[in-house]
Image (cartoon, rainbow, N blue to C red):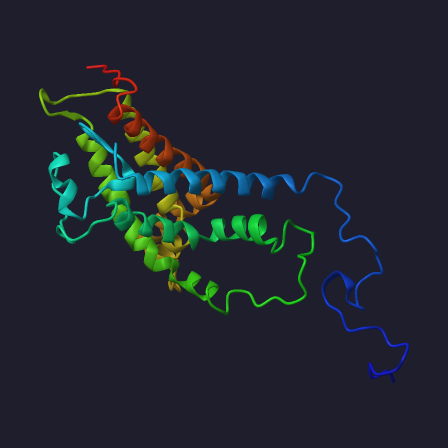
Length: 275
């Protein structure tokens, strides 16, 4: 009986080179462009990270009545309280000297970083863990999410509550986009439609979250005894089927809304007004 110490014993390896696997010299047998999806993921996330970092630290051109950038709403410091027609939460007062966006972006950022879909996307794109289906990752050990910092992924359900609150604030900002400071309610410009589309996509992404689905229908042994929750669970489950699409669509829309407000505030063009 071989013990692993004989001169001709096979080395104890794992993954595609394990002794119990077929002796195939190739790392995988895929012939399609499997690398395209993780490459696009890396490019898209890096583009958003670069843009959002620049805008978060710029601390300028984020308000043009009646629009306020979603990166800076709500304002939690009094340094920008006079720039909003609506109420603000001056929780940090005047001592906060950095960009107000840094107080807000931590919540949607944490929600997206711990999102089940985004975890799969950037694990594959940035860490090759694994790079694609049926393609082995370039490391022998796998610890999953049992160690720091990946152990913090379990906080996803708590970031969901914070992100739902942020989505409510963005909805409130969308309502304010129908109000002109000079003429009152009834204003509608191109920015109003941009804000409305973004609010819908943000809610679609938030409500299609796996944590939301579990909150609504989890821990139920008999759906028949909870018909309302069962119906809501069915709705969220249908949204959950498109969670990846909502994740990318809402990521793009929130950046476009901020860019639109930036162009208005910097004087690049005027908001086309319908009425």
